[in-house]
Length: 162
Image (cartoon, rainbow, N blue to C red; front, side, top):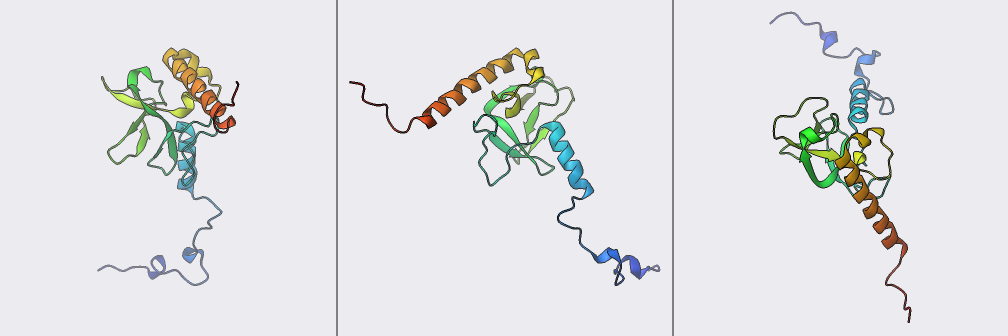
């Protein structure tokens, strides 16, 4: 075997090589992961909390991503990928991990999922006006959120009116 500089294997006392990174200071890969999550919209509520949108109160389908964040997908809604704006096409692999295809053109016949944030009635998104079918999804979600709010406001049965 060749010669090995032991200082590259065993930390020298007093050197910084043996210190663990501070848990308060994010590592460079953590910064990159957070940036990717923000760019792709993987900003869903993290476990153990419920998968509920903080903007409208509706439940979504939370999926982990490959970079440790979570995306809140519109529950039960799949769409032809060519009908969904770039950067909003999410796919779920066989392990249940969500991934975003970014600006890549979808394969013919591909079906994807959409993130709840583009169907959320609690957010104002300029780009949604360009996709009329998403306006319909947002409108239905607004009606659902209003019904949920009304149900939460009325404890129990309706009052006796007669």
